[in-house]
Image (cartoon, rainbow, N blue to C red):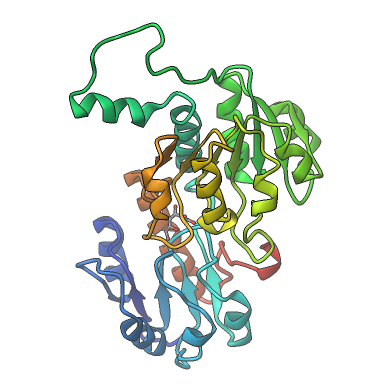
Length: 328
Ligand code: 8YV
């Protein structure tokens, strides 16, 4: 790293307090109007920065990294997921990648729990009806949803967020089932009274609510494929606060429309910000615009992490949140 202040290029608007601190510490180029960078502008940023601070909305793939200038040594991503960055190419080009894990766990778990509650209890459907002015008053069989207490929750990906979802879900009377690459520590399993399913197929056929909490990697792309979606019980619900790519969105929309799956709560989509038009027609889905971790506190914590990663790196130390490909 140079002895002058490093040029840090930030691709999106961050909280003011974070931008101010970055300006103090580094030569920082901000994106004040927050328009996602066009490909040419991102290319220019990659070619000139010492440190790039991208977000999930920037595709840093092999062809983008081919434009990396000799100065680019660190990509300090603002976010936990790193599926928008080609990690292997970054490594080959000697570029370190960091992310912001841990600080979004509780917020994302809250939003997951909110969707787990909202879909079976028809929360947004009821709200839409009331706002439309068509509510004619209470009735014994009006707006009946399904009970949450006593149902089985199947968590796909029992990492930090998956475990935080499980802790919340237990308070709502759900029993915890999970599928993960590795079985978790016995202490965690017994704390959560969680049942491990080595076979995802078998777990899918057994649970009432499915929550996706694994990262999107080549191994989890369309993990819920059309074939696997067919294993899910027709009354079951799917909640996804991870990445849209983990589910075959077309197949899901088709099956939801055909009532072959009970409902879905989706905060993420395969081609964001585009949403499969079929999903928009359905009443048995709750759709959110990727806001699982969107709290003021969370965004500031993420920004702090980005700053710490940059500062330690430019001071010649190993940044705390270095992303290693084998972690994914
Ligand atoms: C972030 C997320 O808001 O951190 C992640 O992986 O999905 C989001 O909650 C976004 O990625 C910021 O880049």
